[in-house]
Amino acid sequence: MTATLYHKLPDGRKLAYCFFGDPAGYPLIYAHGLPGSRLEAGLYHEAARAWGFRLIAVDRPGIGGSSPHPKRTLSSTATDLKSLANTLNLETFGVFGWCGGGGLAMACARRMPDRVAFVLTSSTPTNPAELHYAAGQMITPGNGVYRPRRTGLWFWRLHYLPQYWLLNLAPMAYLRHYQRIVEPGDRALLQQPEAQRIFLAAQKEAFRQGVSGVALDQHLLSQDWGFRLDQVTTRLVVFHGTDDRLISFDYGSHLARTVPDGMLHEYTGEGHFLPLRHAGEIFQAGRMILEAG
Image (cartoon, rainbow, N blue to C red; front, side, top):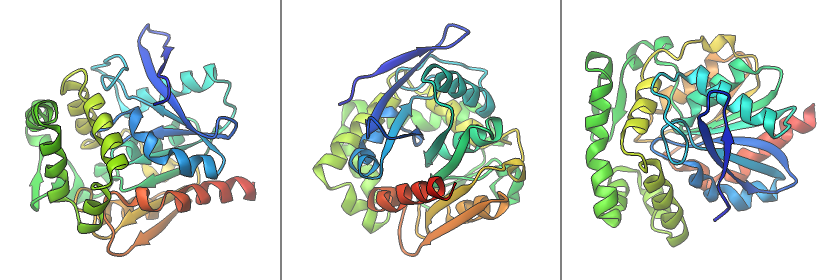
């Protein structure tokens, strides 16, 4: 496992991050999934190296090794990443967000349009304030729909408590839970030993500080993101499977068509873990944008 580093923010908080991929490659900040952590980027190490990207994987506040920030927003977290980028002397960089990391990826593009060269997302939500039936909702396995705007942040704390205890007491049972709720192709991926190892380590790290950071992450994604998608001028490429059982394909489609310079890659019959199978295609899209200038 790559070493974990810490960036001290102006207010004294710290961000935990680590590197994967090509050490001399073009910088690509990785926004992990939900639940997830910086360790998740290990799933893309080889593909990132092959395509010449240095992944900078960062834990969001209150998750993994990063300090809590109970009043944070997507935009304030993007400002945290700007501080890290300054310290790393990154003039420009890309952002890759998987699952719940998509909201932060879009916030980075909105806050730093002169520095974010492109955004890549896979299996991510959209701004619920701009998709009426997504407002305050999350489509969940078993075709249920939660409406946290009616219940508040405490709802998500209660929602994640069983996952927290299951992961810590019986990690293989936690893995089997995921295998049951995803589509068959994803299930096969989660049966691979290396993918299992990285996935479980990343999930356990996500809950290192308990459920509060993860719950706040979900709560922020389920509310108005604080900016309109048509205000994002950065080039966006969205990858989404039509059979994603965790985040509806409709969300990815909406994201791609609402951002002015957005493009959608639709994968028929594929699910939430699409980027593990198509990491090369995702990084290739970033490389093509860079080469196009």
